[in-house]
Image: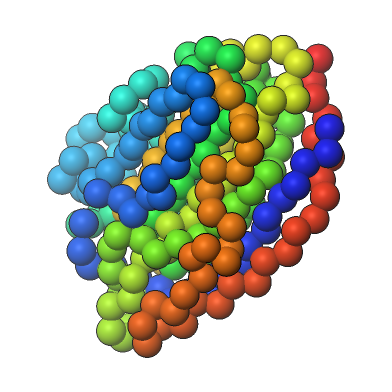
Length: 240
């Protein structure tokens, strides 16, 4: 099954100050569900509950973070980067691997959107696996818009800059067998501040639900956002 991918590379300024999530409002056909991870701070997720801080930053968390609705969880599974800090999940000088997992997804799942509101770069290519497999499906559509927060790059201090909201959508309508579980995994960059994550799922894929680049391309005031977008064809192989 041939699908269209909108690939976007953004160059933005980096870091940390302010606190919600600047996710896009998306409309999905049929039955849908939305889940959020917000206020990802040390006050809400302390070391005593299974998370790390700057002094105890280990390879993974011992306790996943549940979303505000539904059964999906967020977990750090590898890397020493990524610990709840004052205002966000922060990566110091190391990368970290985050995973959203759901073993009881929406019945008849056909599309999934992950949005990440962060300060810094997002150079990873998130991949989706389902039903315990290792399909490593890249998103069919991606977008970047202005986030809800501001941050200061600790490696290059300067005036606060706005965060960016990175959105990724998968078309799963060509998957033959029902999807009974899934995970979306990505690697976070050094000095990244992750403020919030939103997950939208739907049982009907009716097209791209996140905006085309021309819809949102704009400058962040004095901080330029450079967007280069390329469309290319990509073929998914549906697992039997």
